[in-house]
Length: 276
Image (tube, rainbow, N blue to C red; front, side):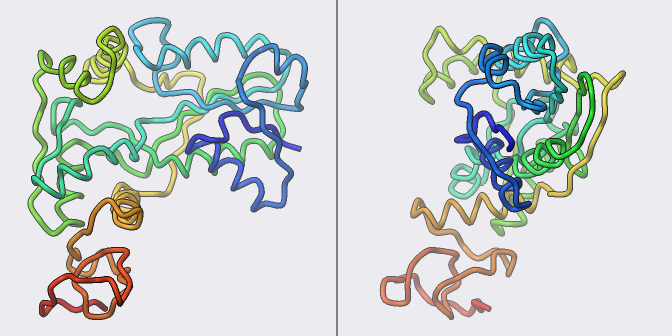
């Protein structure tokens, strides 16, 4: 029996699915509290943490990962903390602007600096793998994808998949708070997000290296972005132009658009672009 915390999230859900696929039994704990672990006494614990979680300050939103690690480390159980890189799926919020305006807002700087990134599904797969291993004491596992990506790489990947020029536009630091508020963040809660971004840009939030294990996962940025674009279309938010054959799923033969329309409802104009 394996206990998965945060199963409603992307990583928790991916972990549970991978364990179930391996024929394992899974149970869910709603919160990662020390008291719950003391009461449940599982054989081992694998917790999602973050790059930079070894730092006691200057983390912003990642501070909760530092606190989590410090609290759980004292529980007398085998424990593994997966310090994951920047989620590739964070680019979900850039899909609309890349598609409609040919640009993405960039907070990571400089634009040409490669940052470690990882697909959330790969985090779940690693978590499931670690849960099936035997060890003692604490493990700090750093995880990133097969390559590091800059904001210029992000824009170029959107360009290839959308078959249009997409550029990365740096957002001036002075405009961050106001922009976050327009996105729904309360005024008194913008500071943690800003501190986190400043930590990435300064290099303060980075992998620890010493005394840790380092893994590279398999999914590339392009693979993840393909999934993001498919999801954007299939949930009915938009219809996306076919990307020179990159996105090959289309429900209506002869339609040059990537969409969720059926043969009876699709009204896109036909062009010479093949749907195969």
